[in-house]
Image (cartoon, rainbow, N blue to C red; front, side, top):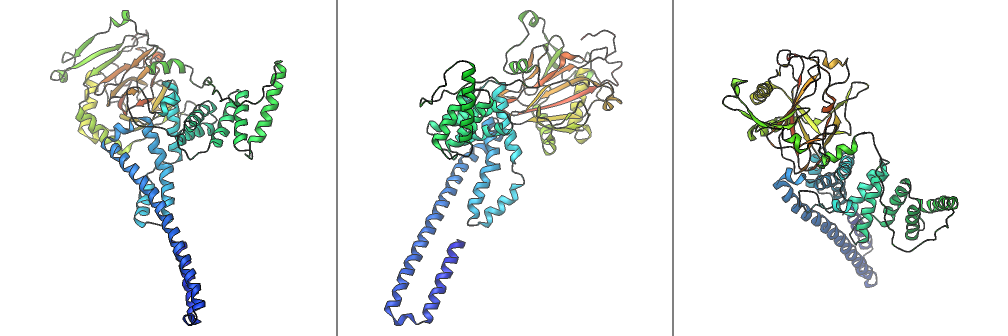
Length: 534
């Protein structure tokens, strides 16, 4: 619009100059105005065409998002329960809405821009988009999901229209590449290439995919395939900045390798590239395989003989008069260490109220650095949490009292009720609830964490189990129920069998609240003993 205004001003200036020369007295001179007007009309037509194209693009965006938001706002938690939907929401708000804003800014609309400005501070940023991409890869690994099925939204326990586009897959691969995670870079660049070759529309070009894919394949140690991918890249883009140098480098390396193995150097081929499969590199977690198997429901160690010794019973007023009117059903989940579940521990109203109190103060969960003792965030704990005091609401006080009634342990020295919500791929890798640092300053007053009381405040469609890798136990979330176990033996020593983890949430939104019960005040409630017994 601004350019068109300048053009009109120049033309009018020319017209004014001509009129001062009394152009109307000469038909010959007036013919120039005819062509001037024609140029104006052509310019106006081009401007209208450009504005219509821009408006068509904005309308297309609006229509697409209007349909999408009708679905998402009808059941926000249900919509975001699918990790692909959650990832694409973060990606849209961090990247795509900015592109739309730039498009509209070419001809500013004050209402739209002021609205964007007001909401921008709440948008996800680059770190959020990267974190969401990493979360999808974590889900892919833990639940052994095929990239193609994942990209089509085919996840266990759900039927969804959520899809990853070529550009989404490319973005996933680029995130992994930038992290030096060439294993996942290969998986997602391969998927982007598959979808592009299948005819899917994309903004990214094939040469960019091949560029990242070829180098990632090389980093995975597959030199022949890296060379062939680079040849294809050079064929598509002979002037590519890095491809030519990489091609010569790979050819020299492969030629040397072939000579050492007494094999002939293979010439270039026009056959379709057979994409490779690679082994996932090992990481910092020693029990990674056992932990992830339990998350998938595999590797359980409870056989039928042991299961026959598990029972259910009522916790009633014989132990605590407050349970006379509301006895609780107690189920054995595991025999050694003993883990029990309480049915209908929290009501729907109580869970809703706890969530309502926690939501405004949810912050990224932290862990204590084992070397420095300082609280910090970590990739192995991905959730947000809030702490609720009993004085804040009578309901919290009642829940605390109920925990004391059913466990027989005082909560006077327990920590505040911690509420946690797990987002996209939310998890907490294997850890101990008790401290293994004998001189931990945080334990001086109330002693170590004697026991854990964990409330499940939502059902989870897939994933999200609480697993104990050392004993092969897996506890599924069941809304309204609670599980309880001791972290310490009666001798006061830590029970290392209680090392546990919160599996990544594959589909759903996981809400929990927990109470960590400390040693002080339990002297006559759980007497000490010299033996390490349950």
